[in-house]
Image (cartoon, rainbow, N blue to C red; front, side, top):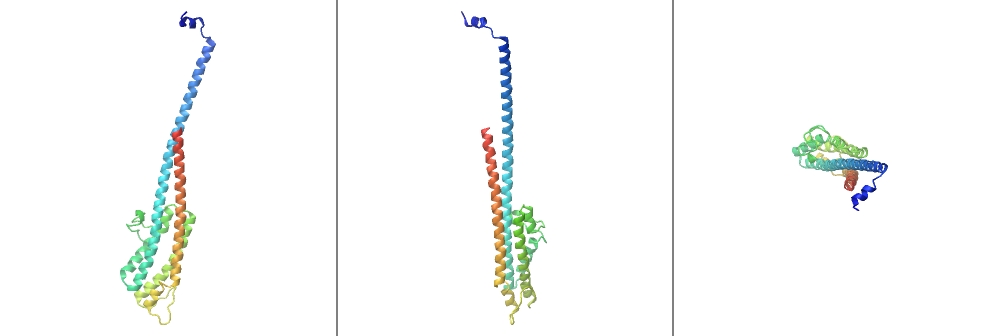
Length: 240
């Protein structure tokens, strides 16, 4: 007897046939739903990876700009010290002009130079403090910067006294006092090289160093955390 006849002799129970059809439909729906869930999850992971990478790039750019601005702060501070000392020693007007130019753009009185660090706000009138604020420094970081700025302002009064003394060729009153019998030019050079001046410069540089270290630690932590997040999303995307 053929197999066809065997199947014909034992027809499938209509109820079982109906149940089989229902089970197949249910299975199909489950598979379809599961596929859609995985597809949506995969798309979410892809978007999450892109967002994490964008955030990582933004964090990296912030670190790059902040480090450039920090180096500019350090270099401009050193330049101010060097220029006022040179002016006091040889009375060349160009050094005073350079000194005042740096002081003015740092304080936001004139436009920042075209050669500004990393081209940050080049040509714009904005103080160095506000540059750091715009770049997203925290309150703790800005507090250190404020402390350094206050000390710099005090030092600037001493530097201004020395340069004005040289310009007028006589002792000009200010934060420092002249010794009995001391020549005006010797006085100007002395107050830019004595222990008090060095101590002030050291304090300023220590604050700048602390500021830079705090800045570096924070930005590195943000970049590391963002990078780990991006890697996690990428792993989940591959798994899904």
